[in-house]
Image 1 (spheres, one colour):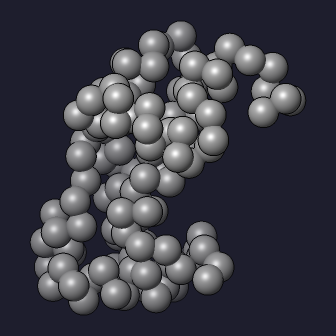
Image 2 (cartoon, one colour):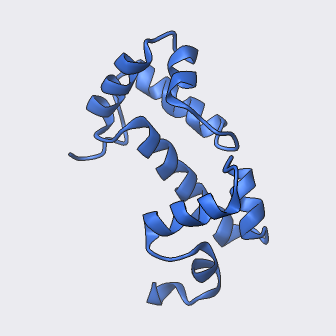
Length: 116
């Protein structure tokens, strides 16, 4: 299913805005559903139908995109970036990054990006 970057649903738009403003925290589906005054399972289904990906996958993708941005434009350590993006441990951040991109944050930061 194709990912929709411009949803029509106002609740999905609000959820996306919430994620963007809370990237530095651990974000749960229930927390956002509560913020929108929606039932969590209804919100989950609606988000997936509208966006073509699950809410947690969306949050992870946003955090990984921000991680790439921070790796490209800051001198922060991988550990600082992990905690800045709300990951409870550096090792979980490393695993998530590698699962998403196929290489470690350190490899990304210090290798020739054309070869990745």
